[in-house]
Length: 110
Image (cartoon, rainbow, N blue to C red; front, side, top):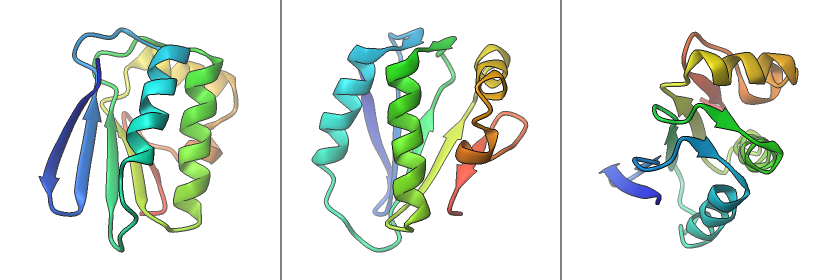
C-alpha cells in the first residue's frame, strides 16, 4: 500500500506503511500514482523509505527514472529516511551520483 500525503500545496510525500520491500509491484503502483500528478512549477516530491529494507531492480529503475526527471527540473525529488541496508545497496550499485548523496537522504535537483 502506498500512502500519499500533501505537506503543502506543492509538496507531496509518498510512504509505504505496510511494505518492507520496494519491489516491482510497488514500482508499478508508484508509476500509476506519478501519472496522476499534474505538472506544476515548484512541485516537490519526497519518497519516505523509513520502512523499506530492500529495493529490487524494478524499484531502482523507478527511482533512477524519477531522479532523471527531476534533473530536467520538472520537480524537486528526494528520498528520506533511507535505512543503512538500502544506502549500502545504492553504493554497491554506484547510484549515489544518480540519486544524490547524504547520510540518510538522497536529493536530486534541489
